[in-house]
Length: 351
Image 1 (cartoon, one colour):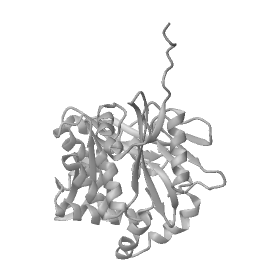
Image 2 (cartoon, helix red, strand yellow):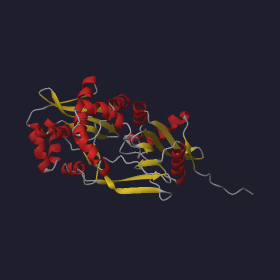
Image 3 (cartoon, one colour):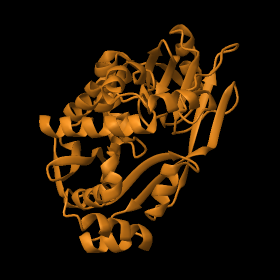
Image 4 (spheres, one colour):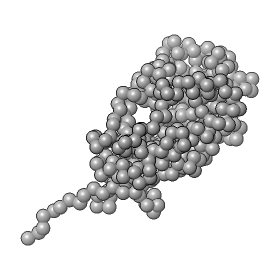
């Protein structure tokens, strides 16, 4: 008589280096994998910031069911955490989210002395100390139009008028990945975030992403009389463009250079073969949230989860937190040279 069939149990564990090709194949084939799950992103963050990558896999009968990439973030100012994934607005589990995988993340955090685990999307855990937020952030994605004129007409009337006003200044738009493009982008972005009261990310992070992504990342800059006014570093993934690190100078606001920049990026992305524009995430009811709605983008709720070890306080890296209000006001007054020198040291822990 045949023995009864007993299904094998799901096992979650750290992937070893030899499994990297199998993990990459799983993520490449899975429809839910985001740009922040790509090996190029994981490697760029680790190489440029020192936040080590850990990849958890769950499997059954030697077949991968799910992958959870994590960065081990460490900062003297903001503490330690396991984050999926570092400096990304997405991440989390790809595949079948199961209790074994989430428990493995908790166990790894304890072993690495990381009091917090943060998951940015994907299947989320329930109970066992996990806290899920579904109303704090929203994403914004919309299809690209058929041509440049249709793209302009797809923008709501009031915002379209701002774009037309900016186009009237006859500014130059250039794209590339050269050292000059990178220098202009960093100069504009650093000034933009200083004006907002936040520290700039390390330039080596931008360089590592550009180098790692190759043709799937570039910089678009808007110039007036040779001066860069607005610039954005964008990521391309599965037919979507995501303007990820962008900003403008004080002068950009008066000339609507940021509006021209996003409109030009839409046209540039279509010419590259993209069919969707991913405006990224914004905190609900923030200025960026309403700016994207003004462009005609409908907010889509995003879900995040975090777990904190017993007796530990979760790290707070939210720039809108009341505890940072005075520091933000002080940072906005810093000379740009000082902010650019101190900013990367601080921002390295804001993954």
